[in-house]
Image 1: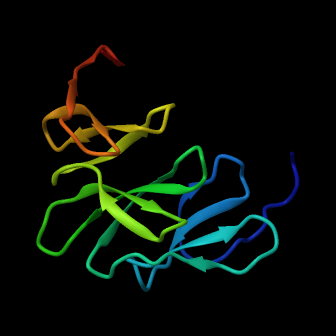
Image 2: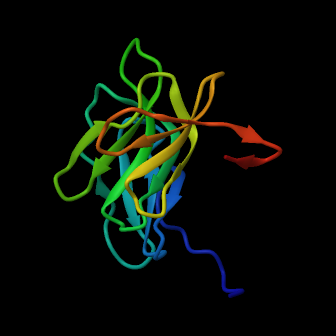
Length: 142
């Protein structure tokens, strides 16, 4: 709208919620400690992410605003995608290792389209199960 920028807080910007009221940031001195910053008044809210997971620099809010999709790797393992539930403060892996960003959340919020390192794209159910392979043809997925 042309107004001046407003400083929200410290860290690396990861994602803005769909409604624009919250931003996800990762503090530079603690990469495994993301925080939610309010775009209005409010204190930062740290996420209860396991210290065993090293977050990458990819995160997306689910459209419902209740969950966050992020890329991260446990020690000595390859990155994968995880879902963090804000209500229960629990996280679970959505993809096998070596599957990461870029990723897109489906409109029904039940699956994630993600790229395997060197393998192409696949659709992964948030609730688990077999992945469905997709092929990228001339900039479109089929």
